[in-house]
Length: 392
Image (tube, rainbow, N blue to C red; front, side, top):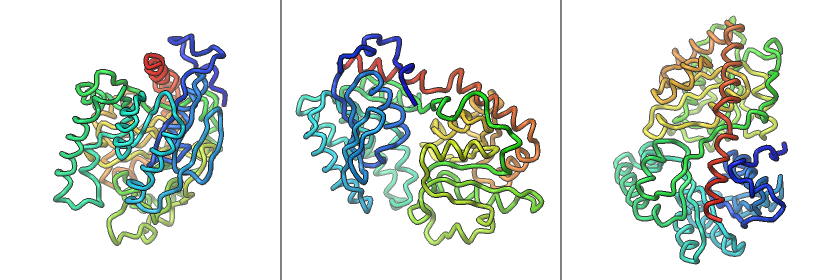
């Protein structure tokens, strides 16, 4: 998909033929073709004329849509990722000798500081509210989470002001970090509407009696309740859950839980990790999308990409009844809000949408229109390009 129309009118100089600054995005956590990093930020920067490279765990070096991929070995364990992989990303970053570095993971804060010490401009892209996120980490002993959360807040306080700029994904994170670095910008995780197809959505009659969840599979994002809800649907309703995400072996689940032994698993079709093109095809064939995050501190004010992706695909959203999400879902009338920890509530919403096709289709259309009008990447890339223009 060409991004030529995406070049911001607020920075007309970016549309010239002269190559702009050399930019390197760094991640040790995400894969090279991550939606936010590659498909949004890096593609927009490349289209605007920047020389863009991503350093990330990947099988091999690659080049796609104007973006160079420089691979580091895939880590086998979390501790490897936080140590060896982070060091490999930093060494590769130094070799590339860029004008601007843009890193995406807290474990690369040290690398960012080292690059600043070399006189480089460095942007920290804060995807999560780290102190809040730590409070829900299952791999940390319960007694230690508040201590580590406090430590993360101290690290942010000591380091965020040293970076050239901060990029955040939600208003609450932006407001908090603005106090640490006055060059803090908000770039929300909105989708490209055209990536999900034209405004002429696939016929509702061609869609199966199915709903979808696309994303990370773990207990915090409601996978257990999703599967349990499927078991509560009437036998007369031939409904399936189309599940696209990581292997269950890598899922963050309570110890000893086997999802495949749950009664609802018989209605689940687990597709594993799929490509962006496969995501588009999947969403074109279902009647609703699930985003039922548990009410952890880092979730209640999050703006997950999948919510807006479902809307862009023209399907209703079944979402957690968070106060922050209510204006998006309820006021737009593009889906239903449920108690994310109550399988009966989730099953009721699924059954309603699958048995009321006309109303469901209208919800999907309203969601699509809202994305085309407001919740789209075009509105956000302008903020990213303005920031880069100010740094160069």
